[in-house]
Image (cartoon, rainbow, N blue to C red; front, side, top):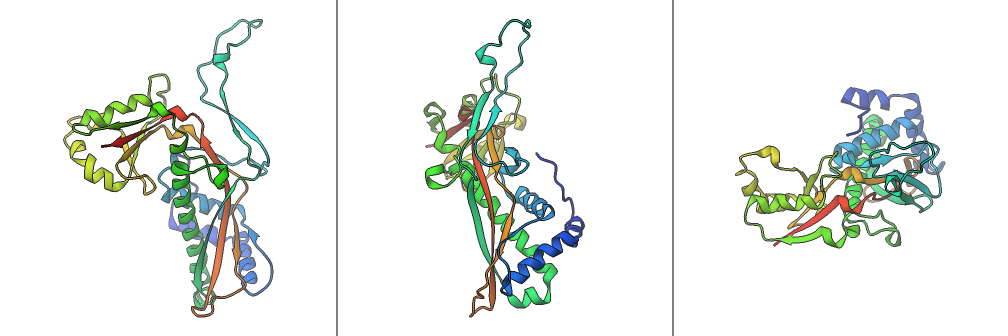
Length: 297
């Protein structure tokens, strides 16, 4: 799990009180008054956003994440699934098996994820410190939900989405089982962990309803809980399925920072203003074989 930069409410308040942050929200306020356009958030706001995303997302804390310095456009190549290095004489070439697998990200500036929220104007005018924290928190929560869904179910560039894990599963890593005892849950893990790539934790991603309806009675009867995988509840996981995953093998790249726009047009009936936050991401499995889908029959 990545190191968090904000550990307490007080630290959050200290960041929101910084001059750069106050200037940022003043620009947003000016947009609402009819001046200016979308505003690129300073680093402090970006820190709050991504820390909040990590708090709410079930999958983001466990994946491989890159934020290229300078918002690198165009193709990015990342070597993934590095195996043990070889001992060789200087005049002997490395074997092809020693090369890391190249994972390519080619979609220019990434795919936009955005959310609009509305806030009463009297709150903005009377309690600006509260509305600032509220905007940041709610937009980050929305981005966290979107990332969880896209990491699992994204349909790829033709749908302007991330490449999801499930769409890219090898055929042999999709199986169905009749669940009668605990071993039925555990055996499919060998599809992910052959013993060659066993340096990272393998988790079981399930819908909460599936866990309580079909898995709980087997889990609580286990005499050796340490033998069980860690179960992660994710709303975006379909029911009656388990996804076994080494999530370190999924790569997410952020293209650019976080920007915020304020609507110049107030929602007249509710006396509200809309705020749209947006970010750009690209992502795909670094090794599709690091995941396996089990259909519970």
